[in-house]
Image 1 (cartoon, each protein chain N blue to C red):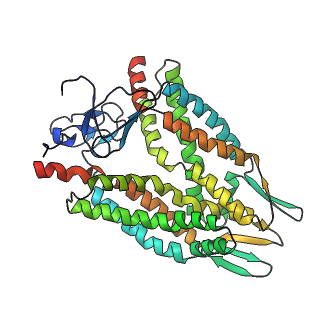
Image 2 (image 1 turned 90 degrees about the horizontal axis):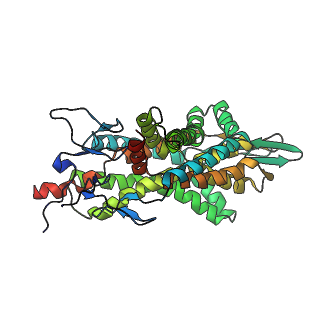
Image 3 (image 1 turned 120 degrees about the horizontal axis):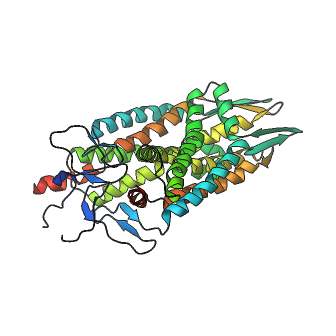
Length: 203
Length: 210
């Protein structure tokens, strides 16, 4: 091998290979095990930042406003995400309450904040403080945010309750739907290689 | 036959799990940190096989109460009933929402069972240094990692339904102990998938050549 392209190891089989320039939107896969190594996204940091900013606004709305309500003979019971956690906690289901809180509120919040923390200063040409630590937090937190699974859970619950009483969809329901898409898109365009490359330029 | 492919470990290079940087550890050092992002570096995840087994066996034991204990207790003016995961599936099936019955059956019963069987298969083949179907096993591991989170579905259904059905004169729904066991199964199998090191699948290739 005579090129000067940087050497990388596949994270799933440890095979060493040379990093090559990819055409727009292409994905590089490991030649042995087929794991995705990296992909090329033009302006990945700018796009990830824009999607993160949108997701933060929707995340706030999705947490504050009611997701869905149930109406029966003039009574209206509405639930927000935090109320759901609270009810589980009060009914002595503390581990389940903690699990719902962590996977739908805490971890997605940390993920969004970490993304903004890393991307915004870099976009402005500055070095984010505690860059390496925040980067590791982001990588650790990512598998535990489950906004899209929660969304499906809400839809299943709605079908389950549809013949019990009238359902009143809340603002947060729509916010969750869009939040799910924005967070998935932000994670997909986020490119750690470009992040570290930009870091070395800024530093 | 081709010569043994060069891997990071075979050339003494450590790949960072967090940022991907390859680095050479300082001689005679046990604890290595990534020079770029500071994450701990290991050639292979430490104690991967015993840790994954421990998490997997615990999850397998809890899978039993998760399926047998009720997830929810419903009480209305007329009757009280307790629902397990399976009786929820049956309810949707008989009430005509077969697609929902299918979603819940797959997410709550099939996916956890599939994950546990797949991880056990991966562990056994890695422990016997098998070179059987390595690319298929690598693919199986990726599938396990991808589907794991969807098992959380039933926990969210319980959470939302319990929070909403607090109507006086109509019905109240209480969460049951099955939800705790089920949540534990989902978390434990996710940790088990994370502690398993897929690079172990490919290590026998070098051993044979080396």
